[in-house]
Image (cartoon, rainbow, N blue to C red; front, side, top):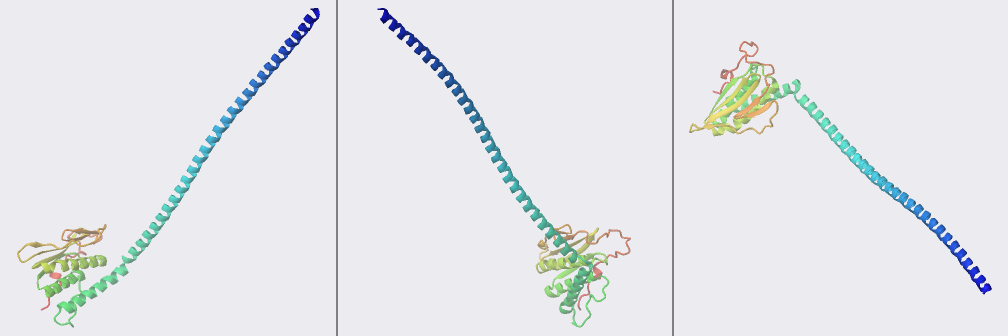
Length: 275
């Protein structure tokens, strides 16, 4: 019995030792597993942080790309606008040069001479009894009023209606104004004389402006007005009922009756009618 007890005691001791060893190993394994889990958790957190930073960086990069694209588009638009503005400026400069050339005294003087030649031809062909008669414009003291009178005389000969001139302008009307007045008068007369029994063409100063209008009456006594001329309104030309107002057409002229250089012209200065 003693031997058996001894053997059992040995086995029991061995079992206790094995149990202690296994428990120690288990505790060690648990500690290692916990440490590994902690490391894995830390690494997972670091990975999540890195992923978030990467996502933020990607968003920042996309936003930067959008800003760069917008900046490029803005630059392209600005360049386009600058090009358009430069082209518009160039066109404005060209128009200004052309207008300045067209308004030069030399050019306007030649145009007024040509218009007086046309009026003289109208006198010879439509008014004068003898084609060889000297035109009414020869050495005229007030060529604009005489030229207007020729237009009225030609209308009388052509239509047979009563056409009168009511002129009140200075003798030294600028060439540019003379051209405009004569052409406007021609258009007004061409529209109204065939619809009127009596027509009055009025060319009168109004301060520094010149007002060119026409009015008439038909066979029933009803008032007849010319159609509105198809003119583009500008700072110098203003279509008005019955005609056109030419602003600043007389330069610095005023209404002073004492201005010796601005002799007033009336109906008596119109071109003489053919016998």
